[in-house]
Amino acid sequence: MLGYVCKYTPMELFEAMDTEITRLEPSVTDFNHADTLMHANICSYTKAVLEDVMEHDYEGVILTTCCDSIRRLYDTLKSQFPDKFFFLLDIPRKFNDFAVALYERQLKQMLTEYEAFSGKTLDLKRFVSMMQNKAALKKQENTRMSSSAVSEKGNGQKLNIGIMGARCNNEIRQLLVDRGANLLFDLTCTGLARDFSITEDQVLHSYAAALLNQIPCMRMLKAANREHFLDGFTDRLDGIIYHTVKFCDSYSYEYADFRQRLDLPILLVETDSTRQCAGQVRTRVEAFMEELKVKKGLSLTGEKQMIKRKGDTVYTLGIDSGSTSTNTVILDENRQIKAFSVVRTGAKSSQSADAALADVLKKAGLNREDISLIVSTGYGRVSIPFADKNVTEISCHGKGAHLLFPDVHTILDIGGQDSKAIRLNDNGEVADFVMNDKCAAGTGRFLEMMARSLEISIDELGPVSLQSKENIEISSMCSVFAESEVISLIAQNKEIADIAHGIHKAIAGKAMSLLKRVGLNPGYMMTGGVAKNPGVVAVLEEQLGEKLHIYEEPEIVGALGAALYGLEEIL
Image 1 (cartoon, rainbow, N blue to C red):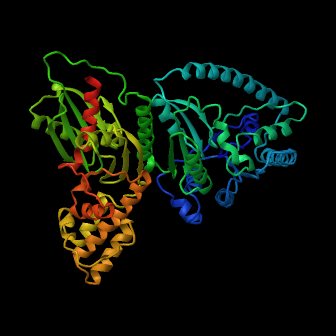
Image 2: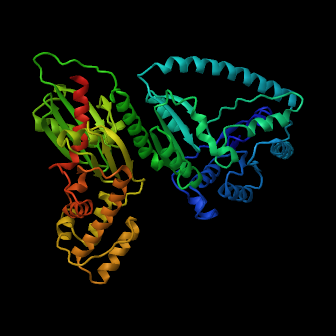
Image 3: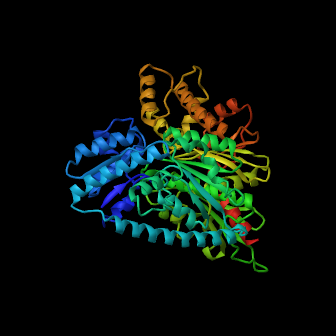
């Protein structure tokens, strides 16, 4: 089996020779081989492809000259696997007769080398027949899609979403489909239309022309007008997910340009091809879909399933499964909190959820059968078997914050492993949001590590910092580097209070950058466990020039919002 990475790859030629060829969608846990064999500045996608090839027995890989990283990948693969087949196709940046002739020559050279490697021979008549059959099937598919598009245009119960950018993996596409969205288009370099027309007299020439005449990627000269490919969809398009590889500048520039010029909601999703980012990607995509549903007037939890029975009191339960704590809230039909619980999340989120459920029911004096609906939220929301529905923590924090403080427009949520800034409209609906990346810098975990370095408890860290007299700067937000800085300051005999204050200033600076990305709209609230730290709160209020709304139990705001979503579904 051969692998490939680019839509300009002539995969049909290999299929006509009965060679299985598959698009590489690497999802790795580390870059151990790549860090040894490649330069540190090579992009994460390229490193992940190398890891994928090292782990699987591919016959070879067809690469294209997308960028310098892919060129370096080709060199590395050739040196590491001299007995396998690797070919680097040099893609012309233009589409004209000369470019087509150049690419046709590339295809012939590739075929010559592969035939010598494999012993197989390309039958051009068979190739033409295969392409004609594919064209006929594609025509039928386009007819069905056109009919479906007409019917879906008037269907206000589904979201119409398009994908743009680069190298979007199938997990995101499947997530959209599973969540009931209509995927109108995929214009990324992995969204292959392959609607080719091949002539029988100049087979390879017409095939090369068809390959080069696809929707241009960012390395092509025609890429300047890529937004015009949306013209046929804007009347029914609800939003765009723009996917790119982390630190891939060319696509990042296009996203920034589209966000400024297109009057459409756009979500940027940057991935590094590691499995560790899957949870945050799911949260971002689902929260974006929930934001679009609110704008379209759709329910976030689906169709109403239950009817309040006369004479009964309705109770709903919200459970927020986070990395540090699992929080539960029970609401009655008057939106009053019947009971809440905060339980430390252990090694298994499902066991912590069971413990939190038992604790909150005991505090409320209720049985499981008394709860009409359970809505889960947080990173572990999909792993709670007793939940009836799930909603992202983005939407739930907005819902809970608006119930507690209706004048709130901007929320800062700092939890155990991530930070979020959420902007609400006047109705308490999520208008925009941003999240930190998968690094835990500036979160509860970060503070716990700093407290250990200072040999004080996490509860002491905030009050101690309020006694600071010297202004100390902590330059790094990386937990490892920051810990080294703290140890160095301890060696300099600096006061613990001053070091703690410097740590809190660093966290506040990172939080302010998140808030500025959604807009500093007065009416601020802080949620999450870090909101209990008076040192962080004091620095943030100083930088904002305004007091923060903080609920007495800031960890339960998300669970409160989840319970409220359940209550609104019933009543």
